[in-house]
Length: 469
Image (cartoon, rainbow, N blue to C red; front, side):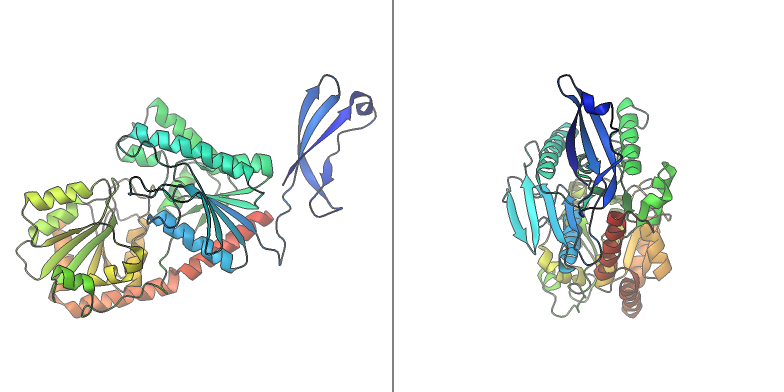
């Protein structure tokens, strides 16, 4: 789409009607138009015409814009998945531009270049974190600065056929809707987390407060206004449908693991196991973000219960708000000999890191199902390791594990059940290996990057063409 303007003199308006259609981008063909009339005292009427989208047709590449606060080389999960999808689209012959922040997640003071091209993706970086994550107000101020800078940059770029808006910061979809108004860009919301549901279920916002009601209205407005919402799981789809979003505006495409880069390896030459002195013990690992939506207490209770079992070790790798809770618990209970604490590791060592463990922990607190979907499960499947999930049974993660028989699903707080699952792997390493083989088979059947990115490409083509599946 594009906006054009025309002026009709008052005299001409007596004999002519404002046309119902205007020429489209394709030459002589006409397209339906939306008109905004502005009275002009000395001329007549100034009106702006928005033509229908003349997006790509068969054989012509799409022009795609992504807006997310984090992007490559950031290590955040949304940055990694955005980069994976962008690379795939570029390889398919499409033009991809990304707008993100100049800051790096978890690295205070880091400042990336304002513009560069990586893997054929043109990346525009705007602003940077000025207030940090010391409080909700500080984060909100950083979000506002990013809204303004990203929206302005998006409006000043050349027209794109479709924009993919992530959910960091919340409601950045509004920038996409402005692009639709002024440039006719189609809008897709990639719902990684659902707001204001996240702060409400985490106790950071009262459910019936004036602010939460306003943000709930804003959320429903955005979800209903976009051309398509892409959700990560069945539980999230069900929740969004309950908010009155038409089912035809919701598509389920889960996240993935790059199964070509992450394949899993043996323990004999694993540098992490050597560095940590694991030997032939059973290593249970949690890696990634220790967020406010994750149940780390059940993990810690299990580690405490198994402190005297020399066959078992735990590794807690990564960062986040609740990492300090883990560190304090380990030190207060004298678990340094059985629990390894480590920061985030480089992405290029992800395969080796995940392969170091015999089984991996995943978690979600009650009430978070549908609001967020932990994506670390798919890296676990890729390295042929069992997944030990602690969380609600209705969540997408629990459903995948049960359907694929690739681990154990434990209810929050049931550390005794988690201990039984862990000791079953320590008692029978061959059984643990068979479960891991089923995990890899499940990934290759349903959750590879190629499968998911191909689904994304088809969805974007449908959205740009104005069709639905």
